[in-house]
Amino acid sequence: MTEPHNLGPARGSALTRLMTRVLVWLWNSPVATSWLSFGVRILGLLVLLPIVLVVLSTAEVAIWLLFSTIFAIQFLADFGLTPTFVRAVAYSRAMRLDPAFGPDGGVQIDLQGQTAEVIKAMRWIYTWLGLIVLMLMGIFGTIAVARPIAQLDAPMEGWIAWIVVAVTSAIVMHGAMYSNFLQGAERIANFRRWEAIVGAVALVTACGVLLLGGGLLGLVLSMQMGQIARTLVNSHLARNFADPGDWSRPARYDPSTMSAIWPAAWRSGLGVAATTLTLQGAGVVYAQIAPPDAVASYLLAIRIVFILRDFSNVPFYTKIPILSRLYKDGEFGTLSDIAAKEFLTTIWIFTVGAVTIGLLADPLFAFIGSGTSFVSPWLWFLIAIAFCVERIGALHIQLYSVTNHIVWHISNVISGLLMLGAMPIFYKLFGVAGFPTGALFAYVTFFLPYAAYHSTRTFAFGILRHWVSAAFAPLSVLAVAFWIALPS
Image (cartoon, rainbow, N blue to C red; front, side, top):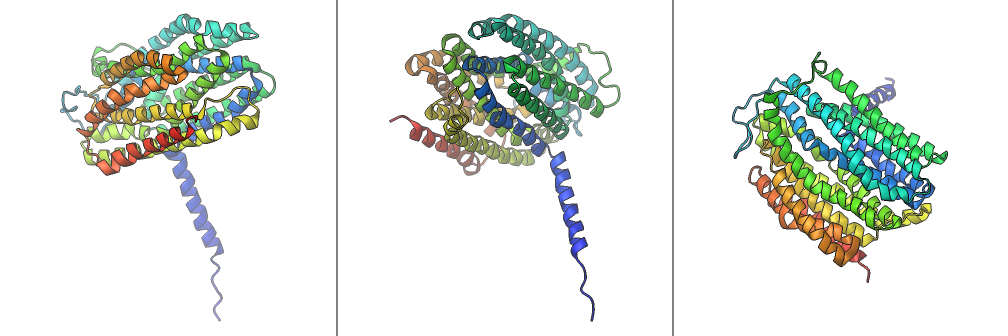
C-alpha cells in the first residue's frame, strides 16, 4: 500500500512564504506605513494623553496644548512650499515630458531631470525659513504664551519649556526639506516607517518621564527631542535615496527654478495660511480670554480633530506623488479612478473616527480620573461637521493642484475672511461654539462649492459614487449625531 504523502512541511513552508510576502508588502507599503506613523500619534492620545491629564494640572495641560497649537501654526511659515516642492520633485523625476503642462491657464513647469536644482533651491529656502520661524516664535509666540505661563505654579519651568519649543521649531522647519524630497521621490514607505519608529520611542520616553515626575518641562523636552531625531533620520534617508552629490552641492538661489516653483507655492501658502491660521489662531485667542479649564478642553478637542484629520488623510495624501506623475504622463482616467476611491476612504475614516470619539470621550475621561474635561458631545460633533466639510473641499483642491493651476489662495483667503467676519458674531451668540460655527459658515457658503467646481470640471466623478457616498452620507451621519447630542 502506498504511504500517504506528508504535506505538513510543504503547507508550513507555503504559509511561511505567504506571511513573509505579506509582511514585506506591509513594510514597503506607503499606505500601511503612513497609517502606522499616524497610529503612533493616535497612541499618543490613547496612552500619553491620559497620563498627561492625570499627572499635570489643568493649567499645565492648557499650556502644553497651547505649545502644540503654536508649534502647528509655525509650519505656516512654509507658505505652501511643502506641497509645491513635493510636486516639483515628482515632476523632476517624471518619465515623459509634456510641454503643454497645466490646463486652463495652469502654470507651465518643465523640471524634468532637474532634481538636483530643486534640492539646491530647497536648501537655500529652508535655511531662511528656519531663521524666520525662530524670529517669529521669539516675538509673537512669546507674546501668545506670556499670560498662560504666568498662571502656572512654576512659571520659570514654563518659560524654559517655551524656549525649547521655539528653538526646535526652527530646526524642524529647516529639516522639512528632507521630508519634501522623500515624499516627492515616492519614498513614502521609508519616510513614514522611520517616522513611526522615532515617534514610538519619543512616546515611550515621554510617558516614562511623566511617570517619573518630569512634569511639564520633561514632557516638552522628550517630545521635542523626538522631533529633532526625526529630522536627523529624514536627512539621512534623503541623502541616501538621492543621486550622489545632489545634497552636497552648494545651496543657492536659482531664479529659473524659483520661477517654476514660486507661482504655485505662494498661492498654496497664502491659501493654507488664511484658514489654518484662523482655526488655530482662534484657540490662541481663546487662551487669552478664557479660564485654563475651558482653554484645555477646547484646545484638546481641536488637537484631537487635527490628528483625526491627518490620520484620515493617509489614503489620499500618500497618492499625491502618484497622481502628479499620472497627470504629467497624461493618464487622466486612472488618476480619476484612484482619486475617487481615496476620497471615499478618507472621508469615511474621518466620520467613523469622529463618531467613535464622541461616544467614548466622556466615559474614558471619567475612567482615568482626568482633572481636565472634554468638550460637550454636541460641541465635538459640531467641530467634526465643520472639519468634515473642510476635508471634502480640501481634497478637491488638493486633487486639482496636481494640474499646477493653484487656486488655494482664492478659496482659502476668501474663506478665511468669511471666518474672521463670522467668528466674532457667532462667539457673541454661542460662546466657544462660535468658532466652529464660523468655520462651517465659511466652508459651506464658499470653500466647498468653489473647490468642487474646479475639481469636477477637470476630472470625472460620478454623482452617486462620489457626492452621495463620499459627501452627503458621512455629513448626514455627523448631523444626526449632533442632533442627538444636543441638550434637551
